[in-house]
Amino acid sequence: MKLLTVTTCATLLYAAVVDADQAQPRPDPKPSSAVLEVTPQLYAYTTELLFGEVWKRTELAPRDRSLITVSALIANGQVSALADHLKLGLDNGLTPSEISALITHLAFYSGWPNAMSAAAVAKQVFIERNIPDEQISTPAGAALTLDPDSEAKRRAAVDAGVGGVAPQLARYTNEVLFADLWRQNALSARDRSLVTVAALIAQGQAAQLPFHLNRALDNGLSKAQAAEGVTHLAFYVGWPKAMSAVPVLKEVFAARGQG
Image (cartoon, rainbow, N blue to C red; front, side, top):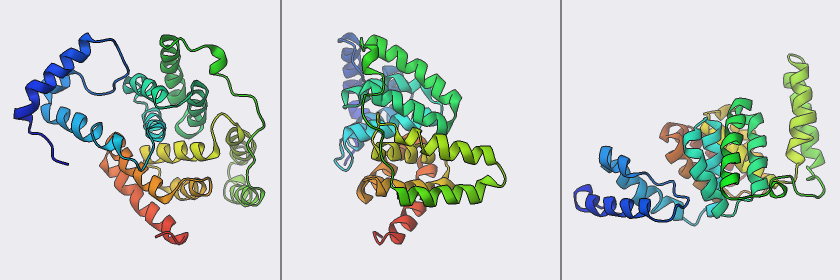
């Protein structure tokens, strides 16, 4: 991939932005003309590298890229960029009920205030898209089934490690987080794992990552998809957090014989 020089493409890029601004509004998280005027090199990286290359890589589907991008933005409380990425997510195949479930899921992994702020942004997007309430609610169907042996081991670990110090936290972890939230069928187990891993990386929570990365792989995420997820997230959470996640991926892959 060869980046065009800013001096040769700035005029063309600016014209494209002006045309886009005058065209019919559409979901487009690319930067505005103001970014081109203030930081032309950043504009070039954004249009040519991030959206011109990274988002087009086939190792992750566009829907998955929207899932982890929206998760990272919510986890870090970056609501200013959320509306455009929610619209892009809808265009990439995310359903309103999946977005609703994602926000609820992340309340437990990034805090209630971040989720509440995200819900307000999602409401405006749903209104703009004329999405009816019935498309937002959890679809009918049986709850997801979790592996009994894995859940028994997880519960025992929570009881042993947390129960003696914070028994109510252990109870909520076992009875609400895993026995209820993780079984809701608005998101698949694989998608809940992908959302959780993305949020942990976004927040720099490496200590929590091994358990959830293993869970993600058990739930159907491939090694290649996990690696591509970290690569994608580097652009949204910063290189330091992505690089800090790499040793965890390496250790988990090696332990599973996938190194």
